[in-house]
Image (cartoon, rainbow, N blue to C red; front, side):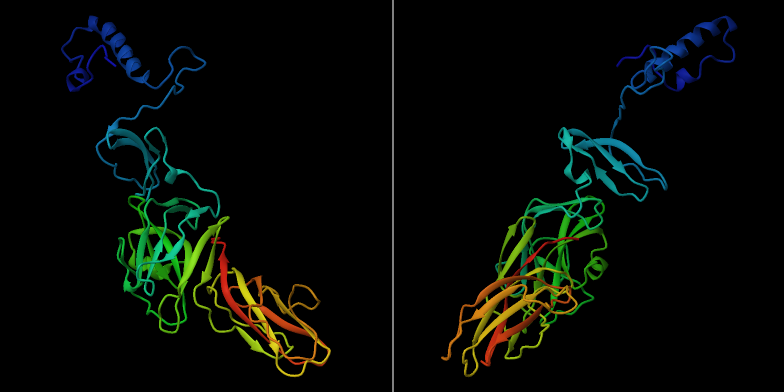
Amino acid sequence: MAFSRTWDTAYEAIPADTDQAKEGALRIRNLKVDIKERAEIDHEHTDDTKGGFHKKVTLPNLGSDPVFIASTGIAYTKDVDGITELFYVDSGGTVVQITTVGALKEASIIPPRNHISGLVLSNAAVPNTDITVGIGEAADSTRVNLLERATAITKQIDNPWVPGNDLGGFPTALTLTANTTYHLFLLRKTSDGTTDVGFDDVLNASNLLADATDYGKFRRVGSALTDGSSNIKAFVSAEMGGGVEYEWLNQAADDVNTTSEAVQNPTTNVPLGISVLGRYGVTIDSAGALGNSRAFIRLSSGLLSAGLAASNNLRATAAAGTTSFAVPGGAMNSVITNTSRRIFTDMLKVGAGTYRYHVWTRGYNDPRIT
């Protein structure tokens, strides 16, 4: 808007000490008008009940981010691709863009707890060493920022972490090891909110963040397991209701292979450090004369202090008879693991027959809860 007078150093120099006193009344009236014209851009001057209230907040377009101030937050605007957008810088210098093209920028919105969509892991073109994380978004582990990937990104487990697609993703503090769980983390760069991905064997991503020093917030988006040759185990995956379903392409060795009726507490082929819904196959076959007998195999959660005490969770049944037999396909079962990858199994037998049962991991559902 146009003002009655320009407020500059020349204006501030009047009245001069040599001006006549009779000009004072006019100068005072002019000053009131000049202050009101500028204050009215954002403030109410109509009456005493609302006088001084903000009508709006008008922010000039800054050419760059302001210098942050300790114990102070600063709201401001600056140009982004020809549009004036709203920003905030906190007392630590973290800059957040609040608006984008007339709408709230998603990354500035506090996301729901545990929110995650997309960001599904898949074997990359070099499946033994590379993992691709698909597009998607997730709340960081502290529920402060929304972390986003507009494009898929591939990271290598056999090379040190550097930012960027199809580059190393492994912490320099670790050594790639056989038969180990490595979690995948989406990282947020503190200065501009861009994201990258890397591996770590701990759930707080501390080894990875020691290399990715420009990154602060993170979220685990999945896990990769290595085999006896330190290669990533091959899998297929699909997002299902917030969790991701993983299925191994190659059947692992049996988790249980026994004729014992005692409770077993096997370590299964799922990620270490988190509870998942394990998917297990159960097979049973004759290990001697059956007589008139029957056997029942039970699987129960590793979250229990011991196996089931009652005939709950019935899973696989051997047919009665006197001839030998095998059930090669077996039953498929879902059981919650503990964070040590364990479940409980046992065999209940009626009669004097001898049976052997096998339990093996077919895959698992990762809920991806922080």
